[in-house]
Image (tube, rainbow, N blue to C red; front, top):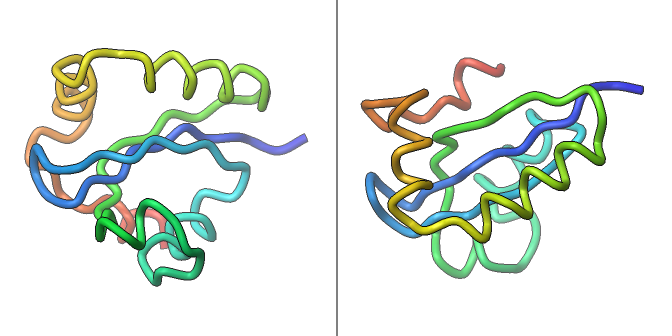
Length: 95
């Protein structure tokens, strides 16, 4: 089995957030950035890849995603700023 990822996209610094999970991070972020799939990120222009974590077990990644989605917004912002204090788009680091 390959790696899995929990990730956060933002519309801008402190903007609208989207939390997801995937086993193909590069492809999934590309799909969000290019509005490949109708949904939340396309509707609200949430395209900036600002945070992620890597997991060996997809079930662990899914559980982490669910937990973060239940967090207070302030905690999510803190999580992003611990990894990415400037809120730069991390997508270029992947490709």
